[in-house]
Image 1: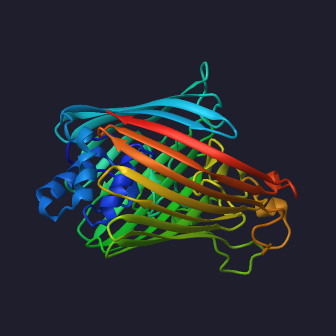
Image 2 (image 1 turned 135 degrees about the horizontal axis):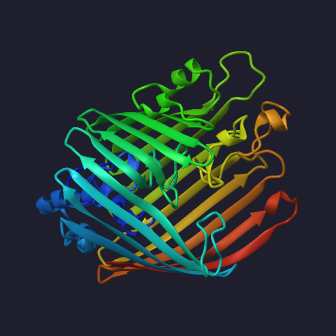
Image 3 (image 1 turned 90 degrees about the vertical axis):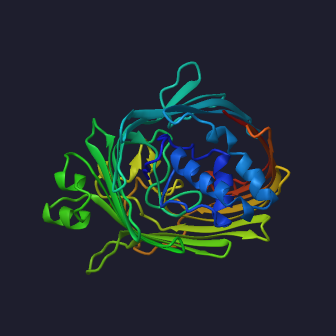
Length: 451
């Protein structure tokens, strides 16, 4: 999560640069960290090592590495990164423009600062986003001081966090548009590494989130981690700020009823393929208790075939009542967004994507996603809804969505990333109304300029 080279600000998690990083990871040139988004200093350090061993690169490798040129010429003491974003989507019509600006630098030896902000204007406002002004919305995603030492690293302030091995989302903690306020700690090591985070979700309501992870890294070949998170409200429990204490026992010994979760994650890198898995335990009834178990998991595979095709398949399953809690203030959400899997609970998703990567900068791709969403909600716990402990999955009238999209990405002059997609979106039982079906043809086009 934190590193100790030169820059401090993080790459936007939706930047086209992330696709290039994924390619280099599958080629075995970079070692991805357990947490995202990636800091620019981490990326530059990885790219420098690749350039030193240039003899191992093919034409496509050299093309992709050259696309990082806007980052390699930054000033070590103070630098900035700009993303200018334009997007248009049809049916329903949506268009937006945004400026994502980031800068950072060195204040003192081992002390750095960073800032990130995205200003967005669209014909449709983000109802869960920041307060608008004349259809402009400003997302304050990063603002922190970083103390970096070769034995440990600490951030104080706001930054975005993506916790886990998944490619698109996490079950424990997914990316948030306005980041997380608090304290972030990373203790690196040869075999073991430790991450800790304490965040203030809502100061007015005294809602806090603590997460820590102990990971085992076997030369990048195998990574295994155990994470624990706890969401509490009403008052601050000091033991939750201490990353070195087990939160489950701290909750038990203090007679509290907070929302605690465990997560096991695994990543296996063989040849040009990466298998990953994440298993979330929200509640397990190890005694006779008239309450349901609450589990979620995701498994995925990313593979680079004949150094040209990037294939990705992922399946996510989130049982009913996961993320819920008996006390409304302890529901696993922030600003009405689920902190874990973005679609909430009572849902599963199967997705497949393939992209052809080449030395010409023209990348055609195909993506297919199938989602089933039941009537469960993270805001409706079992003790309120009642009913059977093991209901059908997904429950009630199931909303089903099938998306099939064909697109192409084009990179030119190293700074410009143009993308276009066309496809079909089929929806059954929209809003959980039987027979309320739709079929839409969609067209999306986007332009990213990286400076």
